[in-house]
Length: 175
Image 1 (tube, helix red, strand yellow):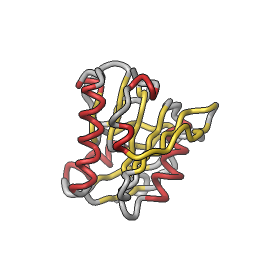
Image 2 (tube, rainbow, N blue to C red):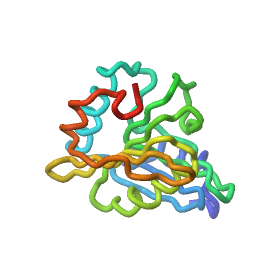
Image 3 (tube, rainbow, N blue to C red):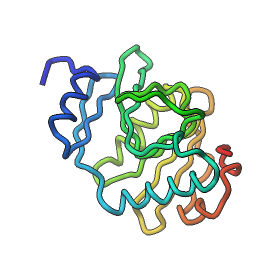
Image 4 (cartoon, rainbow, N blue to C red):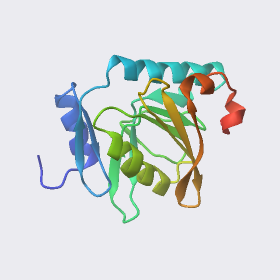
């Protein structure tokens, strides 16, 4: 691994190792994760179907796409949220800008709790992403909805995924 890892380096690592996800914080900390499990993928799929059925066009929703995250101190990182919703379609690329992102979703996996609940929440807030939802893999599949309040997220609601899937997008500022 080079002494300073760039997003181009990360892209090359991912191409050489399709069995892991590679992310880098704006401070240069590289994370290597195994691919999500089946339960994780089903949660993402259920939420994606709900978003599409609610009227968000398919070209504005994506699973596991890279986002270019600018840090508060000028560093550039790359995160791969489990689900992203944009206000308009994006050009093709590996690390997309966050300018048009409305929502990022992270499904918490064993071992990712700290990164998902603290690190990514802070990075996504610093990037100005309006909403950040975290979904636990507990029996209720608890969704914690964060909305940007100034330069930090505030918890707007916490509820089971089944309840979210029985609501409309407008109730969550997505419609």
